[in-house]
Image 1 (tube, rainbow, N blue to C red):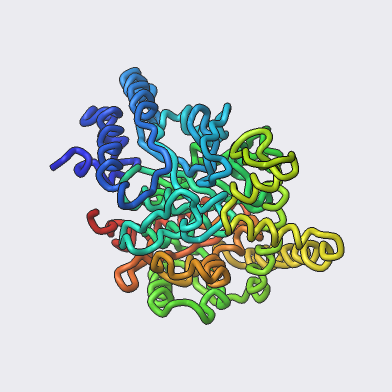
Image 2 (cartoon, rainbow, N blue to C red; image 1 turned 30 degrees about the vertical axis):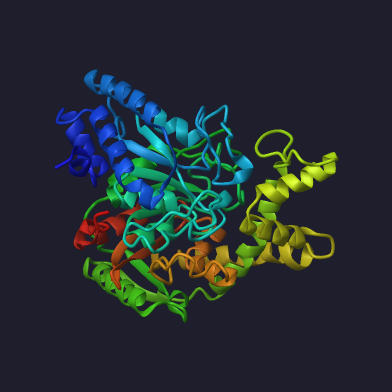
Length: 489
C-alpha cells in the first residue's frame, strides 16, 4: 500500500500519535499528502495553489520541534487554507481574475497562529469568487468537484477546503462563513464544519466580502479535531476592531460524554417546504439519537427566521459593494491595459476582473445603498436583523442549543442551478440566520440520502461554542457516520 493511501484519512489526533511515537516524521506526513494531492486533485480540483517547497521546509522545522520536545497538538500536521486568507509570499487570489498573481506582504492572523503552532501549509483551497456562492462553480479558475460524486458540487463558498478534507488531501482546513460557507459545503462533503461566534476568531487578513457577517472557522474530519483547531485560532486580536476581548477556554474539555440535562430546541421553520425528504428523515433520526443520549428535546418557533434570506441579500451585497470598491486596477491586482483614459481603465478593470456573480452582488448592494433606497432597503434590513437576533436570544433563555438540518438538499449536479440565482441562494437558507445573529453553529455528518452526505446543524448562544461542540461530539460518538468516507478516487 502506498504511503499516501496508508496515511490518508488520519485525524489530527491519529497523526499526532504517529508523530510523537516517531512512527512517521512530519516530512513523511507532508510527502504522503502531497502525493495524495498529486493523485486525486486533477479530478477533485480542491487546490488553487500547492506549496510543496514551503510544506517540506515547514515539516522539517516541525520535526526539529518534535525532537526537542516542543511539539503542540498541531505541530507537523498538514493543512490547507481557503484562498481568501492572506499568506505572506504565497499567492492569495480569492479565485478571482481581479487578484490573479497577488502575493500579500503579510500573513492573516489565523495564518500566523497556525504557523506558530507548527502546522504545515500544503496550499490554498478553491472557492467561489470572493466567497460569493454556494457551489464553488463561481470560481474564476475552475469548479471543485465533490469527492462523493465528482459529477456533483461540493457546496460553497468553501468548496475547496471541504472537498480537500473529504478527499484526504489534507488533515484539516480553514474556511470562511458569511452565510453558511463553511457549514453547507461541510454537510455536502460529509465532514465537520464550524462557524464560531462573530468576533471569536480574528478576521485580520481575511479578504473581506461582508464585514459584519464574515467569520473564519475549522473544517475537519471529526468534532474533536474541530475543537483542537479552534483552540489554535480563537482569541482576541487588537488588529481586528470586531474581535471580542476574551480568554478562550480549552475547547477540547467540552467533549465530555453525555447530554443529561441539556435542553435542545428544534425550530419548526427549519423543516418547511423545500427540504428534501431524505434530509428531513436523517435529521429527525439524529434528533432522536440526541434525545436517547439524555437531552431534552422540544419544538420551538423562530417566526422571523424566514426573513433572514431577504435580510442577507440586502446586507451582504451592500457590504460587498463597499468592500470591493478598492479593486480599481491602480494599487494591486488585475489592471486593464487597453483603455484610453483613467476612467475607461477603471471601468474595464472591474468589467473584466470580476465574474458575473460578483458583479450581480455589487449591483444589488449599490442599489440598496443608493439615495432614495437606503431607508427602504438597507436600514429596514438592519432593523429586521435586530429582530432576528433578539428572537434567537429569547429562545436561548430556555434552550442550551438548537438542532436542525444544515442544507435543504444533498449535493446537486454541477451546472444544475447556475442559471437560476434564486435557487442557488436558497441553498443557504438554513445557515444564514446564524450569521445574521452572530451566533456559533456547527455541521456534523448525520446520514446519507441517495448515497450522499446529510449534515446536522447545531446552533448555540453567543460564545456557546463549548455547548455545540459537546452536542455534536456526543452525537458523533453515538453513531458511525464519522467512519463513512468518500468513495475511493
